[in-house]
Image 1 (tube, helix red, strand yellow):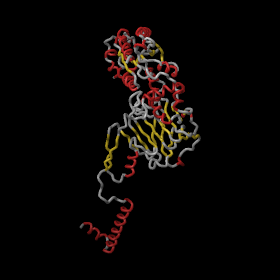
Image 2: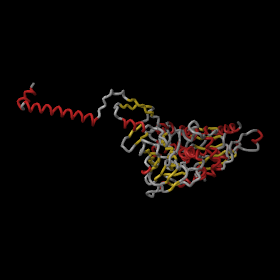
Image 3: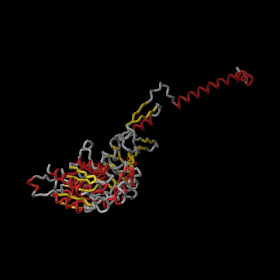
Length: 490
């Protein structure tokens, strides 16, 4: 061979023998090092690991992070498959399992629903406002040390505009107690941390995004719970003071003002965020909660000392003695009744005792006015959220302006039925909208509102919610009031 002839010419026989022995020893050392250091897997390779991950987590992505820079992003699919073929990926496989959405990690639980994200924590927690961090002290949560979740404690998580106004909080699990910040103030009760951001200040959103979820979250504690508010609005707290004091026996903490470095509030567990299980507005799903909208309305009656539990039932004897009360909710700026006084006169002639009021007074006073009535009439708008104060079997008449049928259905028609109210709807004709004073009746604004919606929410809102008032056709609307009287006879 060529190699042997070159070797013979270059070295003596003795040198050739030494070279071969040295090469054999070198190969042996290399093989021994490979087996010792790299530890190759010599058994038969297992079949690929096929791990199915449930992904039913609503409209947004759920992102779970840890401190070793491993991250999974789960997309909006009903199910998907994660394929792991490398049998040596034990650490990554464990991180995949730990990162499954809605996975209960004892003794704490972080979850996401269609409407909200929250952590229901049974262990001691420490809240450090300066860093926006909630520390979970847990000796049982092995394998998740330093894992953190980002929570925005406002129950409208699919609405990016609202959530942009909500402070983010990190919920961090720590198993080594030496790593926990020291308590500067101890509380002997659990905590609930929620936000006054989002659309707080709009009466409808006050109830559907905060009050109803806060009731669901806190009622179980029977008052022995501490509220911490982020993005606090003082006028909002004052507006709902009676209700908040009924849910918690303790003064509210404005957690954003607790900015002193090193100040840490310690609690016996708590809930970060608000529980809201249904995407629908102003509704409690009894299949997912131990409470119902009937329970919530009873709670409101106790908060505001509302006396009337059931609307009047008219019969021949009673009709001469007592007239049913009709509340007309007026508005000043937009979607107003331009002929409210004529509507009131017609209603009186039909046999109603009429009250006209705007929902801009103190809430406790307005709640009592609403509760005293048997029929509530109003144009679609945030003020109609006051139907929560109506007595059972009352009649609710929603006047629906041009183009807002879908909002009227989702925001008030469906919730009113869950509240055991009788619902009537009056859809105005183009001639009853003040839009025809601005646009010809065959203009796309009047004829084809869907084309305006395609331009975006701002264009739609500007026209149909901000620039439209209502002048009812009294002859046509009279039939709706007669139907309300008929329902009160039943």
